[in-house]
Amino acid sequence: MLIQIQSGSQPIYQQIVEQIRFRILSSQLKAGDELPTIRGLAESLKVNPNTIARAYRELEHEGLVEKRRTTGTFVAETSGTLSRTRRRQILTPEIDKLLVLASHLGAAPAELDELIASRQQALQRKEQRP
Image (cartoon, rainbow, N blue to C red; front, top):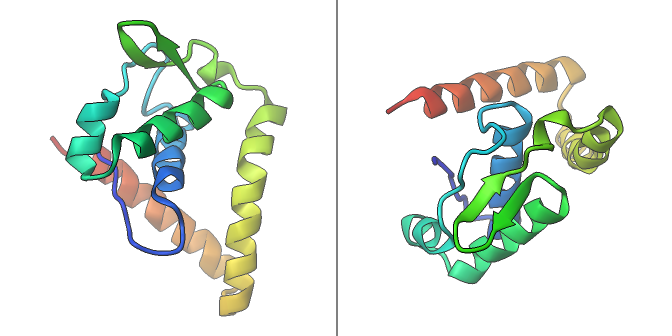
């Protein structure tokens, strides 16, 4: 699983949560797909395993993943059927952050739309690489 960590103001666990959440909500990860082990993902990202555990706990709290004792962490069976209300609850704070930042930077709505489409295509291309 390709996850990119960027240094900056956003905590690492939140970056991991957002990238895995995006993959689940965009159906790149499907119900029943196994997530990397906490230790394995921590080693590949060169972060503390507690950071990955915290990210997985948050995703579990959102109902997007489920832990199965002794077998690992999997995309929840119900993740693909999130209600519109739940999707909006998850997305609204993230969109609010983006809109505030875009406003501070003076980005026009059309520029923001173009950037979102461009980033979505870039993420999809990265996921398709072997």
